[in-house]
Amino acid sequence: MHTHGVKKELDAIQNFLDDLLLMDSKKFELVTQIRDKIKLNAPNIGEQIKYGGIFFSHKSKDIGGIFVYKNHVSIEFSFGYTFDDPEKILQGSGKLRRHIKIRNIDDIEKYNINTYLKQMIKSST
Image 1 (tube, rainbow, N blue to C red):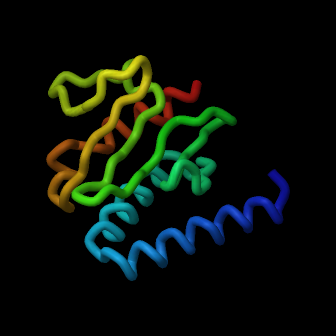
Image 2 (image 1 turned 60 degrees about the horizontal axis):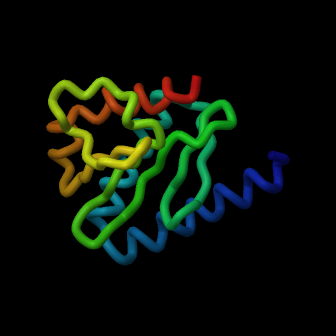
Image 3 (image 1 turned 90 degrees about the vertical axis):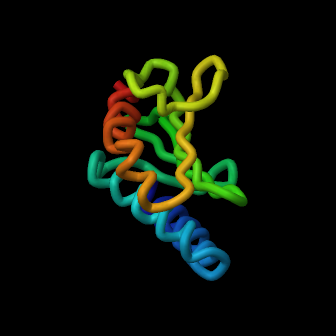
């Protein structure tokens, strides 16, 4: 993607976050913390507004996203069916995708989402 396209995507993401902050500061905080953890695990990750949320790609492969719903924020994993999930945290019964519903800041640590975010990044290889 050329420089103009990257700037356009970053502007769209910033607009999404600005709107979210105005509408629901708690969900904004959840999305921001989850996004920061994803970027920490993969600094070169691609991101764009897609399907109504922030969608991530790594090595040109769509790997998941963060989506805001009325009562929670969902972390979606495109290849979640392949993840190691001994605590049975992942939800969903589709062919490929799985998700985790985050309702408050404590859920981020409670569900140990870093474990799943690392697997999300790894699913692109």
